[in-house]
Amino acid sequence: MTRARVSALFAAATFVLAACATAGAGDPAGVKDGVLVNASGMTLYVFDKDPAGTGKSVCNGPCAKNWPPLAAAADAAAHGDWSVITRDDGSHQWAYKGRPVYAWIKDQKPGDRTGDGFIGAWHVARP
Image 1 (cartoon, rainbow, N blue to C red):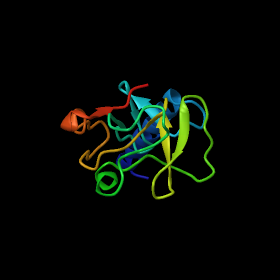
Image 2: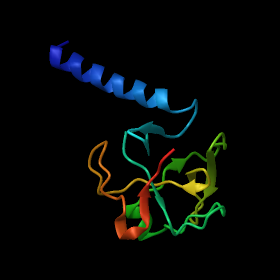
Image 3: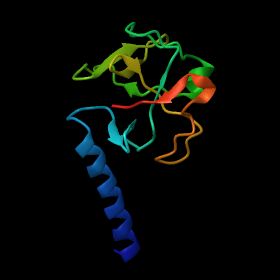
Image 4: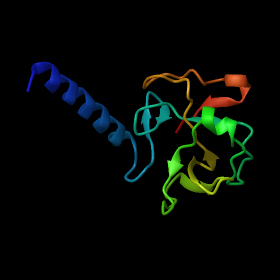
C-alpha cells in the first residue's frame, strides 16, 4: 500500500472517529464545529417554516430536491433528542428536538454552510 493511500485511509478513519465521538450511540448525525452533520460530514439545516412541535415538514416536492431530508429507515425509532417524522410522500425523516433536518444541495464538501441564512428561513442545525 502506498504512503498516499495510507494517509488517505487514516484521514478518513480520523473523520469517522471524530464524528462518532460527538454523536450518541445510534444517533443519525454527528456534531462538527458546533453544527449537526450527516454521515458524510455535510452540514444539516432546519427550516423556519416547518411548524414547531407538529412532526411535519413543509419542504416537499421541488423544495426537498434542493433540501434533501435526512432520511430515516422505516423501522427507525426515536431516541434522545431525535425523533422520526412521516413526510407527505410516506418516507421517513429524522428530526432533532422536534425540528426536521435537511442537507443543502449547493454544499459541495464537508464544512460548507452555504445554505445558512438562505431566504432568511434556513439555518444550520445546532446541538
